[in-house]
Length: 245
Image (tube, rainbow, N blue to C red):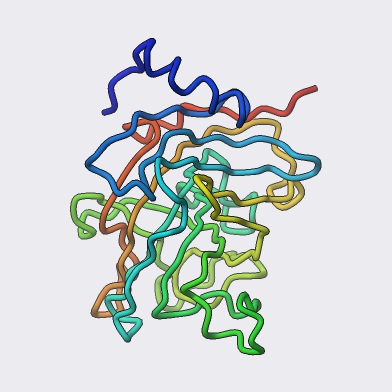
């Protein structure tokens, strides 16, 4: 768990906090985490009719991406993740499915946004390495190693409720195609308030992590393989976004 801020550190980050607005979760820098994934501030704020999910890092956001392995099996996924207390039903999954998280991901070995052509080359199946957005449902699975977390699988023969932009993979994942950016020290995704059912409030946290596709391509299909940083230190979702009246 990260230690509480000292007065000196608060003073050091004061200008940054002012520039990016109040609220959210401030995190200490650490040499143990690659600067591109070392969280220093995580927040959600409203901008017009959108919610902006933002993570500030010590280095350059989005500058590190997985190396291609040449196959879907055992492929790696790098991600900036915002776990939330929103019900999975708010974005089109079965209600009460487990932890609904928004993620900004890169994975050059496969493309899971079949309705989008992010690199605008006329093909919709070759741009998984570009940063893109997902909703995922995270759930516990001891077979996933130290993290104990995976993207929830869809058992064969079942037909759970899924969002209209579900990409067809046998897991609880959505490819909504939200506006996003990974520039300078900031990773951001803009989510229309209408897309999450106009919530009055919810809690959230920030995580940077790697995931890996199971080499055997079976349940669990996609595990959280490495957790690099957690904004709160303990995944307690301590930050709150609340609609201002």
